[in-house]
Amino acid sequence: MEKHAFRRSSMLRGLGVITALLIAAGAISPAFGAAPLTKARVKKIAKKQATRVVKTLGPMLFTEETELVRFGQISMNVGDADQPLGTFGPFTLRLACNLDAGDVRGQVLATTTEANSSLNSNDDSDGDFNPGEALEWAAEVGDVPGGASDPAWHDDTTTASAPGGTSLYGHTAVTTNFGGSHCVFSGHVVVQAPA
View 1 (cartoon, one colour):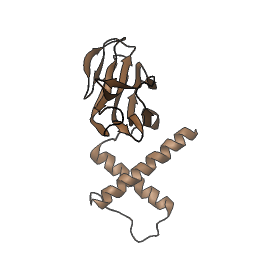
View 2 (cartoon, helix red, strand yellow):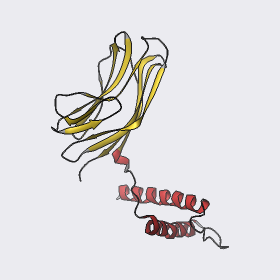
View 3 (cartoon, one colour):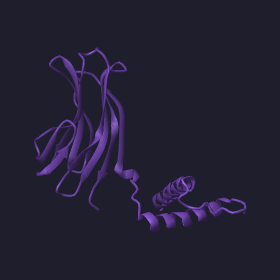
View 4 (tube, one colour):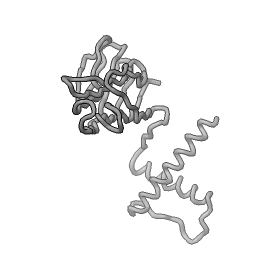
């Protein structure tokens, strides 16, 4: 019961923000009039305006808190054992920090337990991603350990999909030689799984 109350109050706050933005943009009338603004009155007006917005723009999708996984900053050094980031349906993401021809290479690696999956990132792509393969969700190569800092924000969305219905997408920052560590990772993953 508390979970549903939290979702309802989060949705109402979100609708209130959307309503305020639309009022500021002149897309809808404030309709506040001269009566005193009580919490109940503002809530009623926000619901009414939100209903108009939904009728005008159509239903809006909100990301559930359980679908969004944030991570970082996670620091590693060359030679550290790979660090698991998480398992999301058939997909597992892990972090690695290694040497690549004498330079630092920070990687977020993806594996799957479901045959015929797919993955598409700035660094790797496979439309027939199968168990036993490891693909790069994100990666960055920087100077030799202790060299210049080399930040890379992977602003193209990385996606992975499995035939069973699980899909992932997200953004990842990989920085080498930063904050006293060879590899630093941060970002988020959104998980959409079948009901």
